Structures are given as structure tokens and as C-alpha cells.
Length: 167
Image (spheres, rainbow, N blue to C red):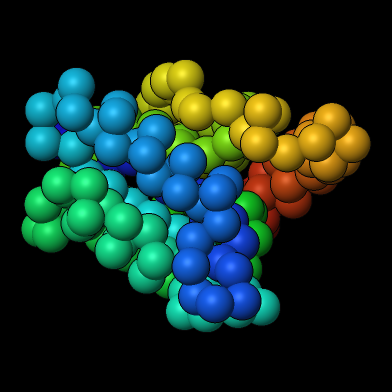
């Protein structure tokens, strides 16, 4: 059984470098992983507007941060949070050893990610993550929070309806 640190993607810069948000999410996952026995890192995120897939950039950051290559499982096709959760669910179900899922993302994003994994039946643990607020302006941060207030119920209802149709 394993704890899976699911690292949600964020923007890649035009030069192919990780955004500050993407870097903080990986740093948070590495910090959490140091205190867990044999964690599995699961970066998720496809190719956005720039550069390679977000998950590929995260894999490189994880390796540079000391994560063992055999403890990294990459999901590099998802285009948004809900798709990331659904694609990670497929990987986790196939592996069959998820003891816990730990969403590693921006603080304002954790409640939605945690809820979606709970809807799928996973035991979810949350940990503090590095804060984005000091690095982005108030207006941008408030926009992110407002988006989450709308996206959380929308994604939850959509996922519940998909689960209901498939059962």
C-alpha cells in the first residue's frame, strides 16, 4: 500500500520553464514526501500553451529534488482539474495499492481536489502547501479563489453524475 502525492499542474512559461506556482507545488510535494515511507509521486497535467507537458516538467523537478525515478508515475494528458482526477483515478485503480491520496496543489485548490478524490472513494489526507498569495497580487489571488468557489460544486456534480451513469 502506498500514499500517492498527486501534484496538479500549473502553467509552463513560454521558454519551457516552470511557473512559480508549478515549482511551489512540486516543492510542497517533496517536503511532504520526506516525512512519508515510500511515497509515490503522481504529477498530472498535459501540454498547455507552452513547452512540454506540465507533468514532464514536474517529473524533472521531482528527480532534481531527490525523488526516486521508480516512485514517480506520470499522467501527462489531462487538460484541467477534473480530467486530472479522472485520469489519476484510472492509474490508481489499475495499480490497486492506494492507501491514501494527498493532493499537492495551491492552497485554494486543495478543497476541490480533495473532494473529487473522496467522491471516487479514496482516503484523502491534506497537508499545508507553500502559499501562492505572497507571489501573486491580491486581485489575481482573489480571481483564483472565486474560480474555485464556482468550479468545486460544478466539478463535484459532474463527477457524481458520471459515476451514477457508469454504475
